[in-house]
Length: 146
Image 1: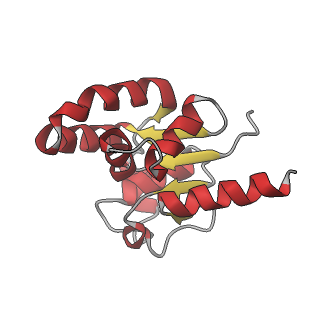
Image 2: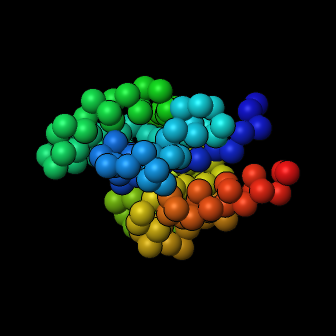
Image 3: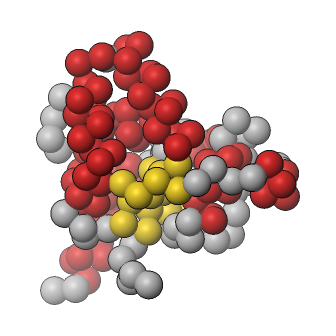
């Protein structure tokens, strides 16, 4: 088993990373960290479908970048079963509950999203935070390694 940080990437972060006008955006930086294998980034088929649908509608020119990022940066985890989702009812908004369950099933320590309020009250096994907050935590950990 890998000892790398396991991070679940929500659809909005995938969208932001692919559509980013700057190579320094937190969303793109997270995906780059995964591409160079410093972290293990995981997502679900549901998140990929949602991000791709939104990109095609709002920023179709970003879809080639999106496909590159998915292929090079992410491990895709299977969708949770309806029973697994039902078992955690109330841990997140109904629409986002399958994302939380997929992150837990994939043994992720972190779930990175811009919509942290959708993942309340959450689950004790996973920390939900925004991309910028995740990058700050990575920087803090790196600073302590010196």
